[in-house]
Length: 125
Image (cartoon, rainbow, N blue to C red; front, side):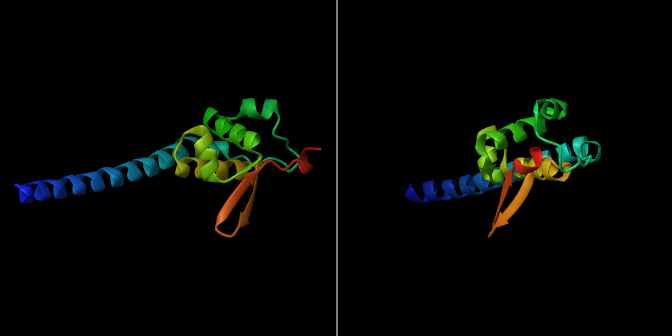
């Protein structure tokens, strides 16, 4: 009887691994779809003096506004910390944060393996 239980667990472990991999693939597909939907038209670079003010936030698409507001609340954050705030996948947040950097709304600084995103307060004055 114990041998049958052991054999029954192996397929369950395999199915669980397949489910985990499918979830990872779905997250990556979501990022790709969002980048295609919002890609080129949203990536208009701004001047370096463009502050992240209310009007700028309101002009952003909802998905980027949520990310930008999370970084404003946190002050300085990694993609993982931002994802915890927004309750979205880290990969999705990483893509959105990088879009905001390209658009000139955020700055990015690397320390070791981690990338930190922040609003450059100096350029807002």
